[in-house]
Image (cartoon, rainbow, N blue to C red; front, top):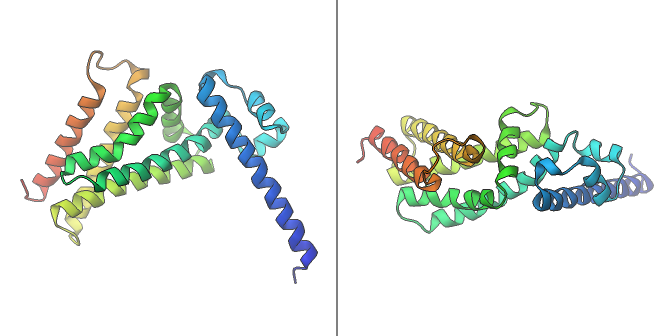
Length: 215
């Protein structure tokens, strides 16, 4: 049986842990925004959060994990904003582009951090909980795209169409990832990255509708 004293002790410990995590998040978010990922050190983050460096590493083992923690929240907010923008569109391509718009605007504010975030998502440690959370958000984006494609195709309940929509959602995220990483690769200099992305979305959407027999 859990006593009142034990319960109170656990509650205080959880509040302290939450307070420390909040301070770490705020410190990391501020420093990454002000200086960029490469110029920030974990010591700076622990100093800003007013905690010991050893304590910091109990919440995130690396600087990359700290960036994942911060940018997962930005991605979550961008998905919510994108879902709202998509609902206002009747055209499928415009709706999908609307889902991605907040992501592109957020990325433009600090391209360096976005590129590192994408890298950590793809190649980070498989045991990192923040990476798992980020990948779950990516899966949510792909599902949002697939659901809109299925709805606009009027083929809800068709296993074949749902599979085609799932593949289209993954393809659209893939081209989004390349667009976000473009500043680091230097690929296709002189091209309008946003225009190219929208054209690729239109091409993928057209291919999806063709696969369902709809023009």
